[in-house]
Image (cartoon, rainbow, N blue to C red; front, side, top):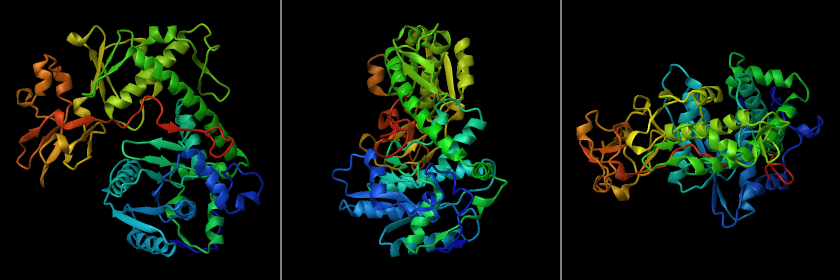
Length: 479
């Protein structure tokens, strides 16, 4: 469905943090947007910036604002459009969006996806979209990709996570800035109500595509959207909570990095070594413990020690969850309650796609390694391709892949595994549990052409840093 320039606002118009009905309908100005972008820099030397565009009002307004901002710096804007192909007419809508972007003077690139039906369709579609956006951005040499998420999206995300029993990190909502393996994802509009974005398009006499799914109350996010809109100020409070929780999360992540550096060893082969008590004792001896702040999220402060045990376990659990995320190659850590249960009784176990096993000849503690049965299938061998969210192929380290070559798990026959020669010469041949999780490069006949030496460990997760949370703009907690 194509919405005219004078379309009525949807139910999300009151989700934002700007007060007053008139303020909620004001277009976003160029100076205001520049202030929102400033803390996400540095921007010196910028030549090209990307913006993800679905064709809806939010992303199209974002593209309009990014173009004006980039032009003022002598930079170009490239719009990346992904067509999921999930509903009739999506192909025509994508074509309409490309024409609109061309009319706005914005270069655009399109990738079409075909996602099969089945369970978890929304989650699979989202993952496929981000993968496509990343491929396009990398191919174009883009470092920064701007996303059009706004205050309404942030409020819905926080409420959804709260209802699902998310921990303190989850209540920080979406990050203003997140660094991935290949680029930086920027969300400068997280404090802007969606109606202001529509007002921005109306001022420019631009129409947009309206997705009927945004009004489908069968979807949880849509129901939450209407619930928030029905309670004045509720969306603002949720966004404020996200900003405060985000600051607490960044402080906790800095503390987490210190503990991990002291206690854990993360190996380039994609596994970790941990002490027998899974870091609990060392957490208790650190200065400045975890406490629960006024926002309900984890905060760090030297006077927050209390009597210790609960805070010590919380810090150790946070560190262990981060390592599990990294070793599993996942976007998110496992639920805190599951990790705390493992800390309470350390034992051999599987959790969230990893195995915890005795370290054996590698030490007196524990080995944290990818669960072989949970690994991703093989994928085409392209330079820079990341398999299983963990290992990136480096063509300079391997034979040049040809058509039909793949990267994926090793052979089921352990004797067929091509051990890294340098490691074997130094007597550091890895345990079978680890070898079974390493990548290899195969030709079109299925023959192994290179082992782990052709790859670098480049996991999706990050134990600390890599993200900026809080309120955007000057004076905001994220700035």
